[in-house]
Amino acid sequence: MNRKFANTTIVFPYTVPVTHPTLQQEIKKKRPFDIPEQEACLNLFRTASFLDADFDALFKRHGLTNAQYNVLRILRGEGTRMPSLAVAQRLITRVPDITRLVDRLEKSGLVKRERCTEDRRVVYVSITAKGQSLLAGLDEPVRDLHRAQLSHMSKKDLAELSRLLSAARTPA
Image (cartoon, rainbow, N blue to C red; front, side):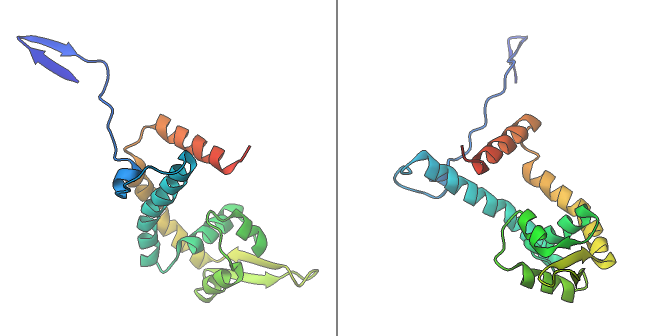
């Protein structure tokens, strides 16, 4: 920040920190949260909901849900067929019924499934060419949305946020 005083420029080597409303202010909560853990959890839930809404809208335009998109990404990344339960374990958001999720993707022609010949309880799932094509068309819009949502944060802040979120998922 620069300020000019009587033909002299004073350069301030810092930026004024941007203040953001607290969760308590955003939701107009009259009393403080009971404990810091409660505020942190509710902050996570509200932020996730805020960020998810944009992705939900993007995927809906392409006939997908967030979970279906995630299944397709997992299968593409693996590069080969996978047991459906292994796919379920890798999902970002847990779903109660992976079978129905795969059913909908199969009906849309985005995945195919086959039973294991040695163990009929195991069902393998793989992404089809149509699924690959749909994902390829979503790659750039998804990256653009990530940038639009979080590019106001520095790389250092993003790394710290990721570190803190990882720590929150890993109880001591």
